[in-house]
Length: 217
Image (cartoon, rainbow, N blue to C red; front, side, top):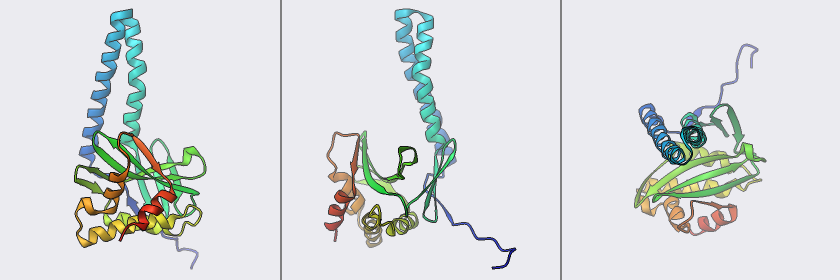
C-alpha cells in the first residue's frame, strides 16, 4: 500500500428507523404527554400546598421525563463492521466479536412484545440494547434481512459470549423469511410468544437461547 492510500472505513448499516417526520411526531407527542402528567401532579400538589409546591412538583416530575423523551429521540445506532456504534449525547462503540456476554431480552408493553439483544461489554455503562423485532397479535416488524445477516456475521466469531448461538437464531429467522413463512411461524415470534406473560422485561441467557435454537428445524 502506498503512503497516499487510506484504509476504507467499514460500511455503516443503520439500525434505527429512518423516518424523520415519524420521529419528530413521536417526540412532540411524548413531550405533550409529559406536560400532561406533570400538570396533573403539579395541579394536585397545588391544591394541597399552594402555587409554589405545585410548580416544584410539576418540575420534579416533568424534567426527568423530558430528558427520557429527548434521550430516545437522539438515540441512533449503527453497525460498522463488527462494532455497534451508539449515539445519544456522545458516541459509544461496542465490538460484537469481543463482548463477554450477550442475552436475548423480551419486553411486553401494552400487548406489543419486543425481542432484542442485550450486549454487555464488561461494565454497565457499555451495555447496549438492540431491538430486532416487535410483534403485536399475529403481525409485527423486524430489522431488514441485510441487517440481520450482518448482525449474525458479527456475532458468529465471538467465542467468549458463545455468539454462534445468537447468530444461529438470527440465521433461522432469515431462513424462515426466505421460505415465506408467516410472521407467527418465524423463530423470533415464537421466542417472544414463549416468554411468560405479565412481566415487563425478561432476560434469556445463552443457555436458554441454545435450548430454543435446538428445537428449530
